[in-house]
Amino acid sequence: MTRKLRFAVIGCGFWADYQIAAWKELDGVELVALYNRTMNKAEMLAAKYGVPRCYDDAEKMLVAEKPDFVDIITDVESHAHFTEMAARHSVQVICQKPMASGPAAAAGMMAACRLSGVSLHIHENFRWQAPIRQVREILDSGIIGELFKARVTYCSAFPVVMNQPFLAELEEFILTDIGSHILDVCRFLFGEPLSIYCLTYRVNPLIKGEDVANIAMKMKNGMFCFAEMSYASILECEVFPQTLLLIEGSGGSIRLEADYIIKVTTASGTQTLRAEPVRYDWVDPMYAVVHSSIVDCNRNILRALQGLEPAETTGSDNYKTMRLVWAAYESSKRNAVIELRDFNVVLHQPG
Image (tube, rainbow, N blue to C red; front, side):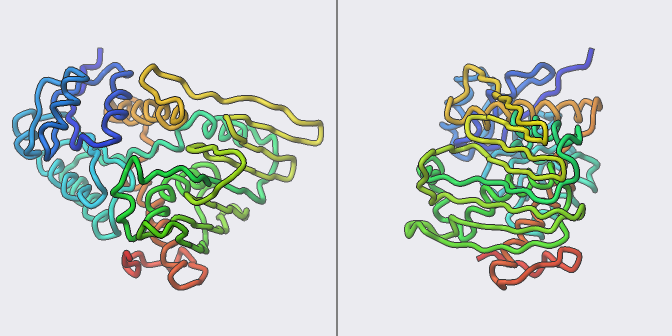
């Protein structure tokens, strides 16, 4: 029987509650400690989940606990710091998205883990959502033929900054926050792009960054992919936090609609199915499709740490997604198509 892997959580903010609840759904892990710079936040979560020890010094925690891995659930600016700290102590790393604040930080994270011989995984859970996985299975079946066009949509008027007020202070907002998810979904479903063109806009005057982005990509397989995202869209049907899809191929189309409805249309007609997320008792019903996917993402990473299967969202894989985020910002700034084979991420400077 595989021994339980001991892990610690670094950061006890908004998402840590759901992340810990998701880990509790899995066998093979034991949460031994929490770190937060404000001790009372760690103590509150520890009391809720029965975690034995809390720290306000992450390095002391790593020395004392010697965990097999850490789950870093902090703001993006601190991801490199904590990843490199864990690597120095030969601790495997799981880090929340977005991976890093910029190319240099991301490269430093990967290098530190590589030199220390530890793995780096990014918790990118959108590709693990039940309807997204179902669509991927349908695509793999070949039923709609050769793909030529797709639209990936994440548009709502949900006031996300109320839950996470730090987002209002970001100079780069929606592409970093949601774009890292949506562009990873594009890569998961359709492969790698050759070029990218992006337009951004700020509607909300109370935030610093952009809250609307539209992206067009030419993919390596020849198809076109359009990704649109907005936190300013007042629509008839509010579908936050669902991702919607329309995929067209030579033999038909796939439409992922609100409430996890998937419609597959071919010359012989339309088949309708529903890909419901698992509704764990700790899941917020509004966030069900997101929260349940945390369990599946964690499971995949855990099985990789146990040597049972490859992980999908490694640091090196997620770097490809982040490179698209940075290229999208560069495209918006220059109002130009970015040919990705020529794109040097060092060109991109936040702000």
